[in-house]
Length: 444
Image (cartoon, rainbow, N blue to C red; front, side):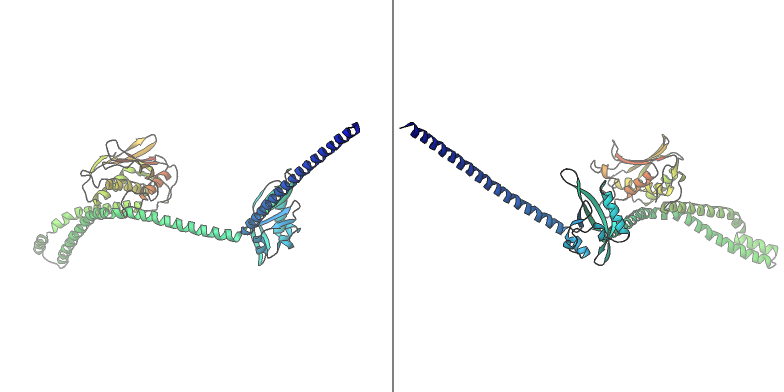
């Protein structure tokens, strides 16, 4: 083989290798193109899905959505806006947003679009020209930035205030009904507490009224005797006839009894007035200013009425002082004490020897009262909920669950405290404290 032939073969071999390399590169480039094409198609599919999703979300929105560029020219509106205004998106593209309003609303919308460049705008009311006239909207405007942080547009979302007003009116109506129901329940609980006292009050009133009634009958008999005697005096009867009639009618005894009968009648009437005043204080709404009152008198009055009504004999341990002045609404505190004593007596229904202990005193510029019973006590899981509205451990129909809740509110409104705990020796103890001076108002 000559040198020329050898060189030719080497040159041909190098050319073949170059072509093979070019073919490989072309294959790689084609494979890359195919892969890029697949990626583009996948991205286009994902983009289409995202666009469809975005379109479906826009269509489903009940709120108005408007997108505009940084100069306020409309770029997009949703279906809710089209239905509200009766204008298609195509007719709005490129239009300034302020063209959607007229009058004061136009100036307000321009101000919102200017302000949103520095801060978001929330719940700005603007009237948009709708199909049937101006439609009030609550607008929220937010700026839209590109990846470099430059402002490229504004997004405006609006909710028709008609729906909000309807919802607000319904909420107001529901709140009013709930408040009325709450007031009725509170009044019902107060009347239930008052009803529990009626039997005791009736018994308490019966004694002085019976006394007054008997005295008045005696006074009526004496009056008839005196009238008969004075008629005889005026008729000119003789001294002997008058003496005999005086002895027959027992005029001297009648005259001697008059003072005691009148005094007894006045005492009975005063007792009736005292009972009625106590009852009136309890049933009063007590919207007046707080005033000093005798807590011991309130406690003993409530105790007397409840014990009179009770069907069982309850042994009462009285550790109360003769007098203990507190400041507040005595009628409301009377209601609290009635609830505490009534709960204590109810807790001892199954106790063979019920014992109720009352104690009161003064400490740290406060007056305190404890009401203790020897019942079964309160279950540990119930203690945190005793003052919750409608919570009761009594059987259905025997309690509303409002008594302690109302009592807690009354005492708290007086600036005091009300707690209930189990006693180590058994039973429960309620403790109420009240300030010596007025420290807050409460409404009955």
